Length: 464
Ligand code: FAD
Image (cartoon, rainbow, N blue to C red):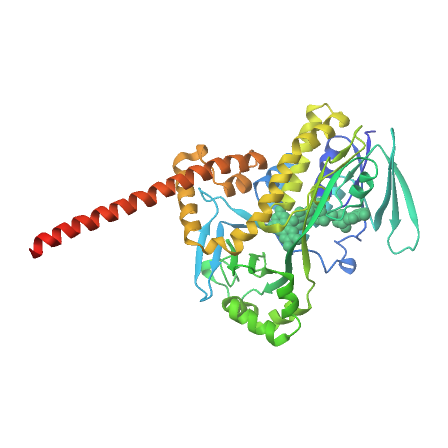
């Protein structure tokens, strides 16, 4: 029998980690404080974001763990080839993401999580629902986890294993327990942005152009950028869209005090979206639906020496959702760790240590990129200078192929470029891009001046 691992958290990352460890011969037990989300009666109605964007890093990691699983997941996605920018008049402008038609993909969070849970069942991996990790003790040989049983006041269960993998999300208890045993740097930052989920229903008629009952193009991520707040929408398989409003807390708090104020605000800023949602429904959801907070968590190291424990996914690096990378990065954690385990012939102490040493700069890089992307999505996409730079960036990318890679391409479509390398390469390219732009502006100014002076000489001659 293989070594015993306890995985805390049966979310997206925990499930993939469980499958990866199982396939390497470990005896895996997964614990989650939720009740089984596949069970209708216990479904969590407050789950974050109904759909997510999965891109290259997530897909490559699924393939790495199990090609069949990746293929099955890809059957349920809706490819999105770009952003669709909606202005105040309801005009739409497409800004493609990739150089050669690459897409990110909209996927239903619950469908993905439930499918992964089904896969765990199929492989005979034990999942214990309703078990909340409350204490962990890390010893030389065996690790001890104490779980409180949900719904059974004061009842706990103690379980032993060889090592613990914490995939228990942004408020990770595993991380907290590890902090008692190791000098872990840790920071948590809330950004001043609240999110509220809204909804665009499917249309009644089949729209040929969109090949379905979609009211707007399903092959784009829709954005209504309004500078310090914005609305986005991603398509669902049934023709509807999950839409999310992002804006400062003070704005949301002032709006939700008054139904009329909210109605006026939504109609003024998102008239075309309100026509699709129905203003009454949008106002109702805006006021009554849960308001989500967004935060970043950074820590280092991610493990306890001796291969006793490690944290992956949001437990190790919670980020704001503006690059659509939280889950993708968490899936990549699993792939990176498995490769290190393979390289160290299964020696956990070596692999976990190496993971902390090498992974941190990538995680710090994507957390920062995600933060910066809020400004790009809510504001920059409407700026002419930004769009010219983006065009130039894409032209260079298309002409120079692998020698010039736009940042978005490296982050979303190139799983082989680590996040920190993507930032380094992009910073170098930015300098060249700015020089090019300056040269272009200077040349066109010079040509205009020359043209004007020639025109002046010519008119002078003509009228003499
Ligand atoms: P979680 O999904 O949080 O799962 C943690 C699990 O641990 C849960 O099942 C929980 O019940 C369990 N748990 C917690 N504490 C305990 C405990 N003490 N004991 C036992 N179990 C416990 N990412 C993308 O890649 N693309 C996107 O488009 C995207 N969009 C997003 C939009 C929004 C609005 C938000 C908020 C996030 C988005 N993300 C996106 C990020 C993504 O949702 C997360 O990165 C991802 O869910 C992390 O998965 P996880 O398994 O690490 O953590």
